[in-house]
Structure formats: structure tokens, C-alpha cells
Image 1 (cartoon, rainbow, N blue to C red):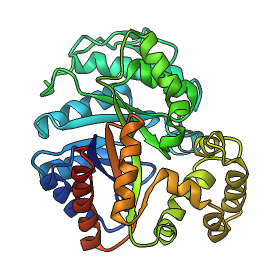
Image 2: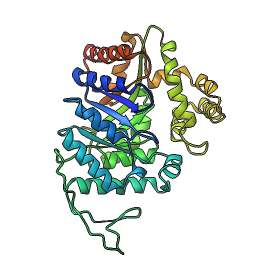
Image 3: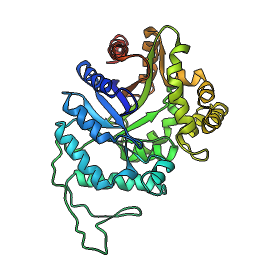
Image 4: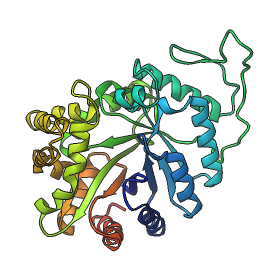
Amino acid sequence: MKLGLNLGYWGAGNDAENLVLAQEADQLGYSVVWAAEAYGSDAATVLTWIAAQTERIDVGSAVFQIPGRTPANTAMTAATLDTLSQGRFRLGLGVSGPQVSEGWHGVRFDKPLTRTREYVDIVRMALARERVRYEGECFTLPLPDGPGKALTLTVHPVRDRIPIYLAAIGPKNLALTGEIADGWLAIFYAPEHSQDIMSPLVEARIAAGKDMSDFDVVPTVPVVLGDDPAKCADPVRFYSALYIGGMGSKERNFYHQLACRMGYEEAAGEIQDRYLAKEYDAAMAAVPFDFMDRTALLGPPDRVRERLQAYADAGVTTLSIGLYAGDLEEKRHTLRTMVELMDQAGLA
């Protein structure tokens, strides 16, 4: 099991610190650093900035929003980033949600599975420097009734195959991820629920004639070190309440649905009701400690070390940590401590 670092959204905190943390992770031998985007900073610019100031660590999008770019544009960006970073780019993709897709990008949130499948097909075709011709339900290239012509990407990526990851939550999207992707970007990953949650992914991968040996399972896991696990959970409450309560509408919130599938239906309902009513403190208070303890690494180093084994046993291949507490030096200390704990557990 390798370590990664998820910086989240640029512009959501102390961005100068994020660069220092990425450089620290690079020096410590972390495998990858990820950046996100929603409707603020874009991930591609951030990853270029980080790649220019690091040496060995991979840089990954977690995620590029599928409605925000044409597949050809994503292939161009991926090829450019891979070239500039000398082969260190990982392409994470996600369909986002109805509110952002339709409200921000003006793209209907319909047929998300079909759209994702076709999008990945076209990106792979372009990155392989094939002449791009495609006839699908969501994408047709070139358009049949105009002067457009089938083109070939002019940039040569460093690698023959840039790895593609999908952010997936629902069973059908997980199955698609297992079938067509090289890795899975997971959120609220609890080892105790991993077998049930991942079964659609594993089954679809096997049905496609593949196995899990070359598939990267990458959950983002908040890490807060301290003497009292309950107090360590407090900085994670906003993150949990935001996604379960506010990342989507009441009718369609994939994170809320995931919490329900994990057995937290009553708490998830209260979190969502409170959050949508703008009762944010009450929403955070409604997040059960048990939920956070299962989906984050909280407490003294010895406790965290024991928990690391559970993630490895559950099939995690890259544990991507999120830093939600402390000043810069405390966060750097957490990065170093995680390397030490991985070594002590024999997982590095």
C-alpha cells in the first residue's frame, strides 16, 4: 500500500502551505498528490504549478469534471501535463452532480454512465494518437453535417498509457469503473463496508476479463493525530456534513446515498435536513463519531497504525490522506508520521 496526498480545492485554504506540503510529500516518497475542482479553481493549473516544483511525485486530478471539458480537450490537457511533468500525470475523471453540471457548466445531467463510457473511449483514442472518429449517444466526432474533419493529437505523451481513474459512488458507476478504468477514487471508504461497496466493481472487472492486480484503489482518508480520537474527529465534521448534507439536492445527493447504504440512514437524513436549512453547526453535530472513525484515521499513532492494516486488508493500494487540522508544521509532522507508521506496520 502506497501513500498519497489529497490537497482538495485550491483557494479553500492556505494555498502557499499546500505547495509546501506537496514538496514535503515528494521528498518523503509519497506516490501521488491530487487536486480537486468544483466551481472555483481548476485542477489542471494547480497540478502544473505543483509538477513544476516537485521532482518525483505523480500529480493527479481528483477530479477533472466531465461536463466541464470536451473529451478532446481533456486528452490535450492530459498529454500536456504528462509531457511537462515527464510522465507523472494521472487522469481522474468524474461526472460531478446535477447542480454543478447543469447550473455551472450548462450540461444536462443525463445518461451519466453512457457519457462517462464514451468520454473515456474518446480520451483513450486521442491519447493513443489515433485519428478520432466516434459515433455514440452523447458524442459524435466529427460532426456529420459540417466541415469538421477527424484529427490526431499532435502532442506525444511521455507514456504509452496515461492511467485513468474514475470517482464513483453508486453501484452502477462502480461497475463501470471496474470495467473501463485503471483505478477508483473513493470517498468515505470504510474497510468494514468495503466488500459490499466494492463488489460491483470487482465483479464487473472479472466479467471484462481483467483482475485486480493492476487496479489502483485510492480512497481519500482524513488524518488527524492526537490523544483523544473523539476530539480528533471534530475537524472532520464539516467535511462529512458538507458532502452528506450539501453536495447535491435533497432528491439527489450521491454522498448521502452512500452513507445510507453504509447503515447511517437516520443520521444522514438529519445531517441533510440541518445542512439544507443552513443549520451548519447542527449538521456537523449530527455526524456520528462512529461514521468518522470508520472513514478517517483518528487518534494516537499506535491506533492509526493498527487501522492502516485494515485498509490494506480491504484492498486499498494507495491511501490518499487529507489534512484537516493543525498549522503547517503539524501537517508536515503528520505526513512524516504516516510514513513512519506505514514502515512500522510493514505496509510500505
